[in-house]
Image 1 (cartoon, rainbow, N blue to C red):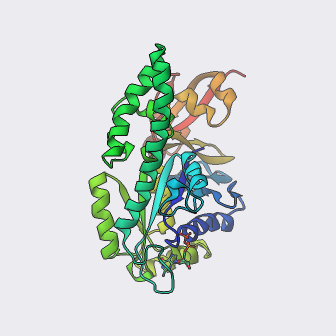
Image 2: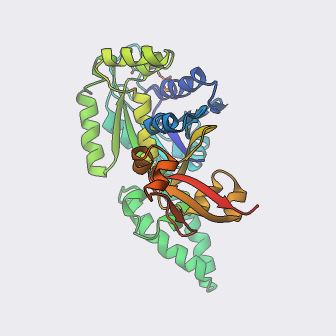
Image 3: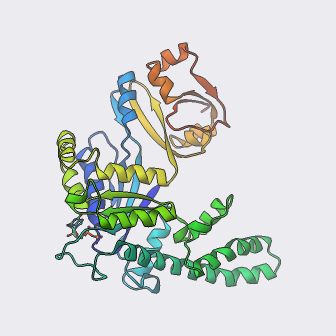
Length: 363
Ligand code: GDP
């Protein structure tokens, strides 16, 4: 599965957001195989209105959404890369995640201490980014020494890695995160280096209740910063989300519209996390269940099948494929078949977002 690490300075609202994300899950647990895996790791259902529409067509007994994992990574303070606080452990936790959700405090509250003494999300973002850049720089410099030794021994792989990391070191020394300088085509090679600043980032502005719908001066500064970086921003009020997560579905909608919000901040965070990771969804539909499955954009049919079961990939023959719009337009498989909208796709087929798939395989 894929996961997002929630990072930020102390007292910005990370745990509040994380708890709200996972509490929603507990509240709707009956049919949903989601849970808090560890105190700081939670699996969260990815809301997708297409599931309801599909299940109405097939009269499914059950809807099973796909899920995304969130990790609450506490303990980062200025100096973490030198081992301050839980520095090293914290950095190791970030190494394990696929993407970073960076929570920034955009709310004033004199009762809640700010470790840096004042509310300033841009400075806070820079503090964290700097710690991550220092950690990456140290890790690359360490590796360079070992690689140079091997490269002198004519180790081709070591030479190639050296060539890959030299410009990264230069960028980090210039104060640029690795994600800004990844050459086209080298994404995978760079991902293997497990650098902290190569991971995609999403900013979450945590604002007070009255700014939940509109944002505030602080969140506008963050939006401006993120625009320059090409990053996405989600505005939430973690406190409000914690309250919303305790309500039933109908009360939630009413509560949110009372605040001028169309959907919960949590839904927006989950959706943005999904986009951040370049994930797409395909469906399997039948009277028993309508189910969503997560794959990376660009995944071919056999590897998409492996998400359901490894045997599906090994024995893959073909997949019956119906585009979501066709499935809805022709009211299901039978109608789609009559309209000639069922395609038989082979092992090189790249699955599209929304495809309804039925795999044929040898056991
Ligand atoms: P963490 O250290 O980043 O995990 O921060 P917490 O989630 O523990 O939050 C720190 C404090 O800030 C708690 O007392 C929260 O109730 C409070 N808090 C979190 N979000 C908000 C918010 O949106 N508005 C206000 N006023 N307080 C918040």
